[in-house]
Image (cartoon, rainbow, N blue to C red; front, side):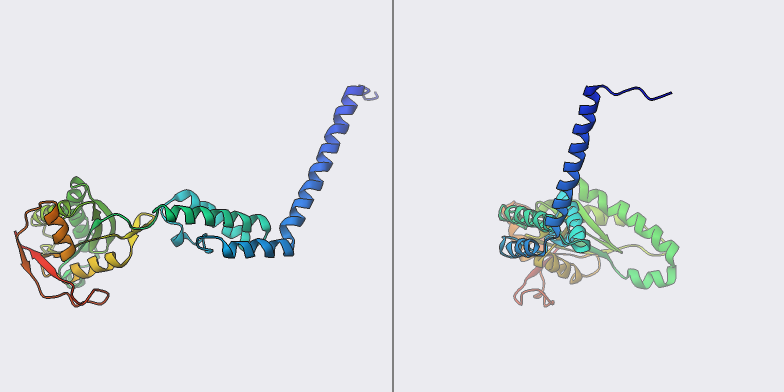
Length: 276
């Protein structure tokens, strides 16, 4: 049995589809050729060199906290690395300009004062050597339950856990100091294998740069050094913290401590112990 004859309309439709498919293949081939053209690729790369912003825009550490440009940047970087082409370079150039505009508007750059807090446990390492891993895990869980809720209840944010310590940020120094005070009270109820945890803590007010969910910069380094300089169950604050707390009318009882002679900290850097 012979197949049914196609109508004139059907034939015209199929011919039109065939022409469109052929045109699409030609266009795709042309696009691939242009995308791989070495001269045009060199021109686009040269243009990227004079564009504002960082040419390494696909570096995750340079993309800041926004998930979308980070993902796009990584994808474009992979495309450009594995199969260099005009489209990939142009895409990176566009993202580069967008990032530069964002930076100019203050995104991803520290422009806001924050109270940066660091804490760590006193003599924890020596105790762990005797107590063992199981006891250490139990203790660290209890410590987290003790000191992290006061951070949140005082409108702070736990940035990260650092083994036997943590880093947190607050919008104001008063709540930061109160969170540490409350945390120390809660720690007094904990004992694991003969170890009663005590923390040393430090607070410094500065303008760290936020990258993703983390913070970086000189002020973060200074805050860590302030905490390192504290003694057992002691809270040290920087002169910048004291000044900001005074402006916010926070009542503090303090004792002046010797200049903090630590690497990465100004020579005349003054710290105070909060005793009240």
